[in-house]
Structures are given as C-alpha cells and as structure tokens.
Image 1 (spheres, helix red, strand yellow):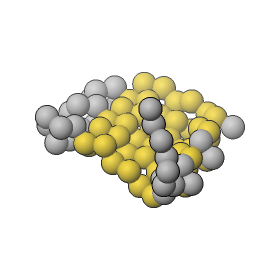
Image 2 (cartoon, one colour; image 1 turned 90 degrees about the vertical axis):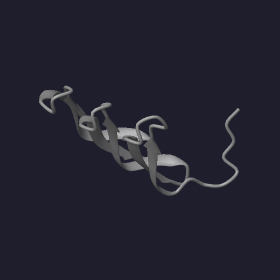
Image 3 (cartoon, helix red, strand yellow; image 1 turned 120 degrees about the horizontal axis):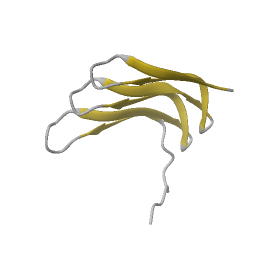
Image 4 (tube, helix red, strand yellow; image 1 turned 30 degrees about the vertical axis):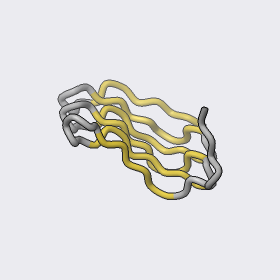
Length: 77
C-alpha cells in the first residue's frame, strides 16, 4: 500500500539498480505530477517526454525509437 504522509515536491529521478542508468525523471508539486516528465530507453536515449500540469498531460508529448528518432507526437489539452 502506498502512503504519502509527506508531500512529494520537486524533481524525482529513478535509476536502474543494475545499470545505474536513469530510467525516469519526473516532477511533483503537492503529490501531483507537475512539470517535465522524461522516460528513457535502456540505452539512455529518451523514450518519450512531455509535460504534466496538476497530474494531467499537457502540450506535445514526443515518442522516440531506441535510436532517438521521433516515432510520433501527441497533443494534449
């Protein structure tokens, strides 16, 4: 069970225990996703990235293949 007795605020980085590579970078404001969100492939290249505002995706999110080439873009309002 997850419990947030303390508010999450600021930038969080999740690192792979085996490789030491960053897997995910995200930002919180009062326990809500808020700001840049970036998820990485195992090779360290960006898998997808975008922005959150009050726990909702906003703006343009870009999805990349393992070589860093754009696969597609999505717009959230």
